[in-house]
Image (cartoon, rainbow, N blue to C red):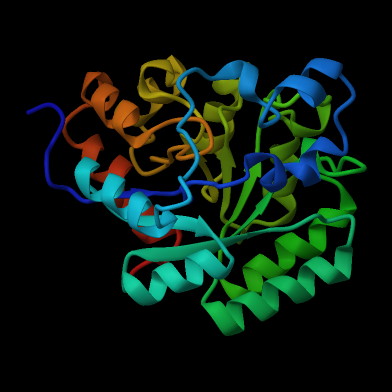
Length: 288
């Protein structure tokens, strides 16, 4: 059968075309030290990508543009960053817009309060954490993150955490995949989703997903032709219910590129609906 048409993909990392990319990433640039990133890049991991989607023109509605791309590529629903645009998009496109909140666990109780408030007011579906991008950095198993993990369990939403070598030029030890082992042990009820590759420890990520029922993986920031072999093999064998699609539009990849390359990924027939849609609906409670 190969790649199936008409599934209605759920994109677990998507946004709206940006008018001012530098302003969006200003919070990360505070921790950058190298001059090339500071002086030449429009976003901190720009050296890793080519053909980055252009920002929204002044006469274009970013919400209209995003949904036009989604419709063209067969993306039914998306997990967007919580904000004014996503709230407006949710009103205009009911049932297609869900939101996540990025927190900095250095503000321990502030993060907890923000999560609870967003769940109550905006039906928040996930929390995200970028350990290498925090200032100061917060390792995956740091005590400052434990209240965030406990809160996610209480409000029944997953936490998405960067895993592996960071794209921006930050130290990456705080995102070593081994650190997820302790978190899964201490929080057996937590749904935790690794994002942004887990490289070069993809095989370790697979071992840990085999071990821990609540540990998952999403393919964010990777063009399909670069999906790690260990992840594809795992999805095709024992991990069909653990691997989920996430893109990187408009941050670094276009939906057109993603879905042009997608049919060449060697997933088995039974994996496609789970990868593109069913796992996301289940893990993130998107049908609730």
